[in-house]
Amino acid sequence: MSITTEFLRHPVLTGAIAPSSRRLAEAMTTGLGLEHARTVVELGPGTGVFTEAVLHRLRPGARLVAVELNERLAAPLRARYGRGPVTVVRDSAEALSSHVDGPVDVVVSGLPWTAMPAARQERILDQVTAVLAPEGRFTTFAYGYTAWTPPARRFAASLRERFAVVTRGPLIWPNVPPAFVHRAALPLVPAGKVRCGQSAAAVS
Image (cartoon, rainbow, N blue to C red; front, side, top):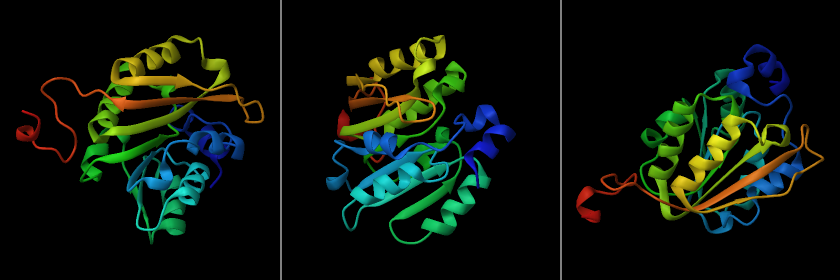
């Protein structure tokens, strides 16, 4: 299934006009501690470019939960990775916490944040911080031409509200379009809320 075809069918849902490059996949997955992770989540895996990069780094026994809303993209992923360490879930990222049963070490996202309404951005980021382990990490990307748009600035501000450490990498020119990577670590959970798999008594 072509990501370009899906973009033409559902531009807002798909977001990407072309598959991510290997250079972007490397930038998205380097330095996250994937080699030591037990549970990793991928949001919006699309055609599996980031999935391959994640699996290349995972140790034996680790698992990857890939959440893809578009069944036209989820079905080929399921056929390709349906056995072994990968679970492909056809659902919205807004339902992430219902598909993991414990703390997640790393969340890798290919979602089109700048194409989302503000409320959906917030709901998904709340799900991400809810499932991440205290030392967990989150990585995603954005196209360079969107960097100064209101949705992109809003998303960057939302990351700073939810993580103790937020960085932005350099523009990766070989990608089409050129893109940069957001990294975030040490998720902050609002008072009164608990992480996925953690009881309220454990934090009281």
